[in-house]
Image (cartoon, rainbow, N blue to C red; front, side, top):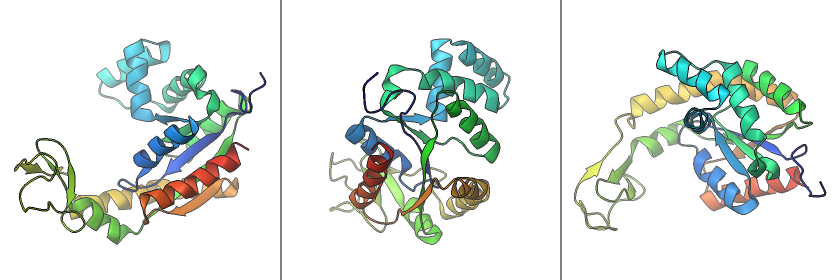
Length: 228
């Protein structure tokens, strides 16, 4: 193969960050700009189950039993997915690994094809600001247009700017107490991963409290370095 990135050298990036930090938004922008493939654990599991792969059948049996899918099944599903042609330009992992045990298993999987984690990007946020950002969100019940108590209210109170709808809704878990608890749980869970990738000199922290395009620019620079 004579491409700049063969499957054996395709870059692998990890996005770390708490709920609401913008991982999904940034991953989609990187997909569009660089042709990278975003891989989230939930999507991988659903796709493998739907496709009826061997690993997918194992996952389905576990989930139907009401149990958590084991790390070895997730790794098997990820191994199958990384072998597909569209991953040849590189991938962005979102939501995996969550523990150092999973991180070690992922390193082993990547080593099989000569790959490695090129960068573990931590989207760093201010917890208090995140509570305000997430707990103030609401959407139009008709078209889904997003609004915020502090940052983006309809031009005409009670009426959606986009469709004129008058019914709005909030996610049940978008309240200050729940958001604060989710952030605390995230930091407790992810702290060991931060140390793990810092020890590998793969950790890069980015201030994720700025403008979306500014954050995207910083991520793009990281990807360019990883794919050089």
